[in-house]
Length: 262
Image (cartoon, rainbow, N blue to C red; front, side):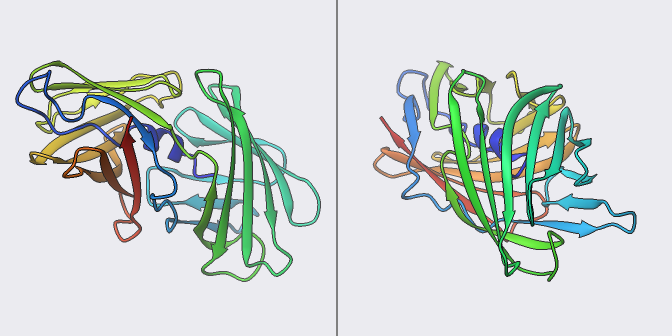
């Protein structure tokens, strides 16, 4: 599982402003339409180190070395990961945030070495349990985990399913993600705002820049380094909005999420 995706997906949509708080077309509750979304195509790589370790890279601020030896390794800000062998070409993984287990996974490499399947279960900040299965296709490499992998199939929630948007004042918008207990309140002038939430990594900020009346560009950073970028656009009928996003160094690997107004 991409270590950044849960937080990224939780912060990818803050609407372009409206003339007044009351008539903002973005006010309301929005839910992800998985059937209409395109959430595959992004890549990550494992590189074999001379010392036997593996190096993970996905074009965001997530970049780290780890072993398949059952030891705990730091992966991203306050996150750690532990990989333990679980049979031939299979591993169990435990993800922790500030020492607390937040997800457990099972990773299986197919017999022909061309497919990697990752299954995760865990509990979200609001107490809801989740189950996710991601399938990756090999793009490079021939042996073991080492190589480049592209997301081919996503099953189950990869991020928040519900967004609640409100306008506390003209030109000010508040965005809440109940299941992640994440919130942001911001102006659309490019100013960076700290993001709050129990699983938000330390040093995470987000800024928004208005492109047009119904479209904005956002930039997420971690400790001042750009992590993720994207553009959100509301539909003409106001019934949905589209979020196109990419990791900072992978603009050619865009995903699209569609959210429908309830």
